[in-house]
Length: 489
Ligand SMILES: Nc1ncnc2c1ncn2[C@@H]1O[C@H](COP(=O)(O)OP(=O)(O)OP(=O)(O)O)[C@@H](O)[C@H]1O
Ligand SMILES: [Mg+2]
Image 1 (cartoon, rainbow, N blue to C red):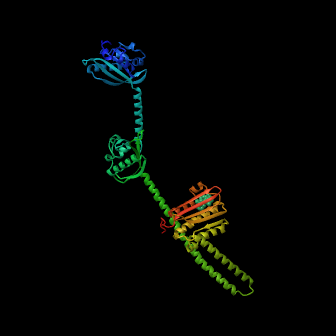
Image 2: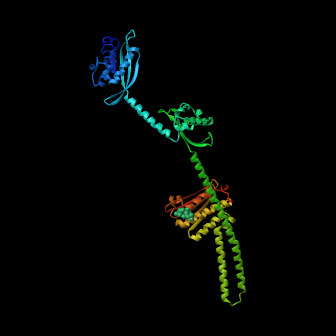
Image 3: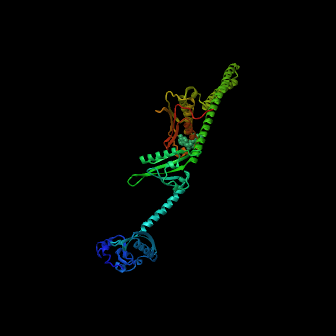
């Protein structure tokens, strides 16, 4: 057995500088001879086994470990004696029922001739690190599972555009079986060239601007194009240095298709509504004209004939004279009624004198019929296509009908203006109870919906706003020119 004196040349004097270093070492340290007897042990190591260095010196190294581990270390120690080379191991044992992980470094102490005289064991408890690593790998497994089951393509690229990680959805969509197959590749390895170039350009711009990028783009691979919505952003370290990019992308082809369908259906409905509206308008014009012309003419004839009959009546027939005169009055009233019905259907003034005059007539007629005071202001001449003018007129009529029916107002004002953008602007405001937001957006507020739709058809907007107790304002803005988006045929 080697003695402590033989090792003096390696360890220094007992209590000397090297021993002092070993004592100060933050790891557990012991020295054994070829028989694996403990020559030296630091306090840290002895204390971890609830003892003092003196209690361990002279005992076998196996006293330091649980039995199976003692046997394994024995093998390693003998290996160091044999080969003269350092052995590094990581072992695992139960200590008081808690698993611990030990990193052991076994270092040869050689004599001048190179012969191994003793082995220094440096032991470190790495349980905390191993546990942290295990926790990390569990977390990684969770993340992995989450990402792989994500219906989006997810990726992480380094600064040169190499994939560091992708999820399974990504791998499948670029024709690879496993996510791992994509790691280390670039966009050019997995996508068609022009697509890859676009992605690389996007990455560069994201890294340069450090801003997120959201794009909806069609992707043409084989077959019909598919639409993707992609979010990209740069990955920064804690100092703000760019490390690479990350992003995810989802297939929105189906959503796009439904959106498109919905848009087309809306367009169709709008066109249908416009068609119905214009047919209705033509019908009104026709009926108004017929009532006016045919009935009007018949009534004029009757009135002339009555005047003739009145003259022909024999004098003294008071009763007959009274009847003829009553009949003449009735005919006159009927002429007025016919005129009223005809102009309600379609005010001829709209065709004859244009929108401004028609609005003035409408305001006057409204005030007379409802008793609600109605102020009107129109520009002196408005040059607007006849069918556009009619639509605006009808919207104004609708707004006034609402005032009469719902507002409880005593005053309403109509303002027609040409604004700075060459748009016709119509404002109808009353001083009634004020429409609520809920009423504005109620699905059965079809009159208001019709107004918005008519405005949209002319490339404009209609807005309705109310303030409780203060009244309601309908604002319509439409371009003066432009063809309606529907056909009236
Ligand atoms: N000027 C207004 N003041 C107060 N409430 C209003 C006014 N205009 C509309 N409303 C409210 O908004 C609702 C919706 O109006 P909308 O014109 O869409 O339908 P309506 O007038 O009830 O029926 P119609 O389809 O015959 O026009 C009305 O029922 C009413 O409650
Ligand atoms: Mg209405």
